[in-house]
Length: 226
Image (cartoon, rainbow, N blue to C red; front, side):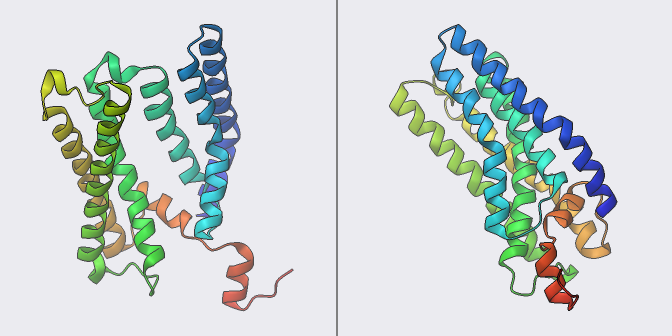
């Protein structure tokens, strides 16, 4: 686990500055073109390092470099490329890809939340049905909340992010369905982890994000603190 984390830490030393540089460049380009709305959105993407730091402080766990990279890639694909660079308006395929990927990522965070809320802090095989239901309900709830948000945006700004004029409710329903399918696609990895302890890729990220901070772990195991 630690060796894997060290590898991702080295990757992030390149990936994170690159992410920040690209978004800063996009913000500058939109500013020159007087596209103030997209310039502000690109600048908002620069807040991600702060948001992640607050996230780890909130859950009281060690920083996971694997989870960090996943979040940076996820935000870049869905926010920077999809919204700021308007890929969603260019092709409907990218929108469906984004919603499917969202289902997978939300499922990962749902499992982490399930673990954090569990008094036993265990991921035993017998608890898989409960964990699976928690994951699917969380993904479905998140998909519904997002579609409600898009509906409110269309009312306030007069836009049509849900493509109601062209598709009726079809676009909204397909978005929710593929998101839930993405969450369902996560479940085999969860089963492999809870039944046989196999981490593979996604559950390896989960395991790395569940580690306690060093000073807490030392107190828990009885090791002397420096």
